[in-house]
Image (cartoon, rainbow, N blue to C red; front, side):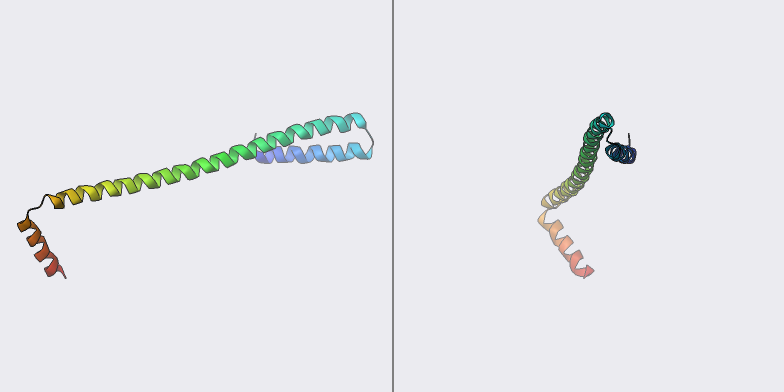
Length: 102
């Protein structure tokens, strides 16, 4: 059941309870009070589920961000390992290329 539908039902029950209060119909007051209490608990449960879903979405976004950073880190480590394996002569050649690039 959607939150909007529960809100509508809650408002309808409140209106019926108010009407029962005006007419001093104690049985209906009791019935509508119990129904309102039940709807309120269900409404609270829906709110909790919605909040939990929002938090799960946030956590998923954080995990995706961490995974992306981890991939970037792994790529940088691989590049660093490539540079570490270069000989001194190769490093001098890269240094000259960088000077020419400027």
